[in-house]
Length: 401
Image (cartoon, rainbow, N blue to C red; front, side, top):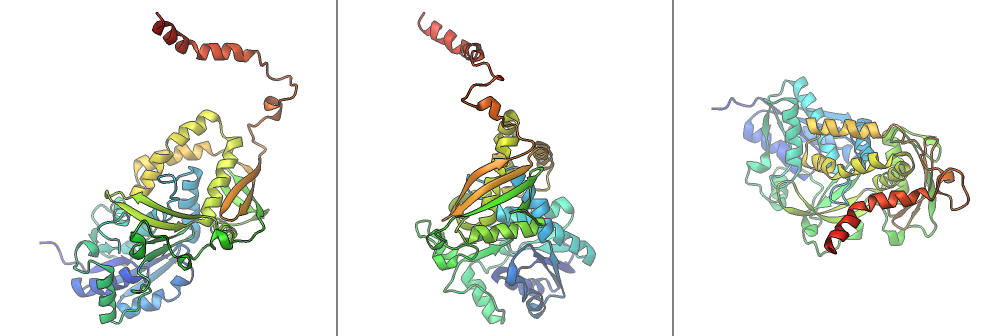
């Protein structure tokens, strides 16, 4: 028989799921429940969290500002890799979960808690991301996953439970979709979005205006990089979190970064998600442009061949794994010379690269010019082509007997 749980640290957001879970854990396990909330850029959503958690029954509440850590140690490393899942998703939620889980485990250690809990469902990816991180930090930690235990198996039942216990929640039956926000993005799923044919309603979006309502005049910006990381916008140096926030503002007002996709979850089912990632969309376009003049061809091609694998590891929750450590070291080694500036245009939902320059550029005008030059002998191309064509010529000769 398992030993009784004495104290649980819950990853708490104040939303529908975790508000109900906090009360349910205290009632079901008859133990102390500590609420842990990570500030990774939720904005105004955090203001009532502490008061609400105490009112719902939390024995203690931790709210930690992890915005700079999130961007510097999770977002920027992924963008140094140009990571993207299934061609569209910039991994906003995927990158946040391992940080939240790691910080939650630190609180559990401080509080001498013997268990941790989260609000992820038994159908989604987040349960894996949280729990892989928990177990990487402490292989003996006990994990309580309410969605895999209770009979509150729908949003409607959760809202009824909240109403019964006097728990205020932001989700209503008139707006039945869930959202998750951080400095990199905001995601929407569930409810009306479960029909992949139905377009999302425009007033759902928070970080961006629709491209149709964006300014009719384009805006140009310059993004500066040092060793693969963005460091300044329009000549102003900013901390990682402040820089991403600035890009979100710039991209959002021009309708940049909206994505509507049906993705393949790790557990095996398809899921429809709608995302706003204005700053990340700008950052990825700029970083790729910066690499185009500073990264060796074969290094770039080898790294690019590993992007799907890197993105899968992040999406599946293996941030704290030996294979991820290895990949990240390789990626970071490619970024030593990715330094310089990129000029971009933001207009009606689009990001267009206008120019790029670097003191470490491999681009040589005197090599590629169509004018007369003294550095490249065009006649050398004859032998180069014939050597590369040798196996093709041999095959053709054999086919013709």
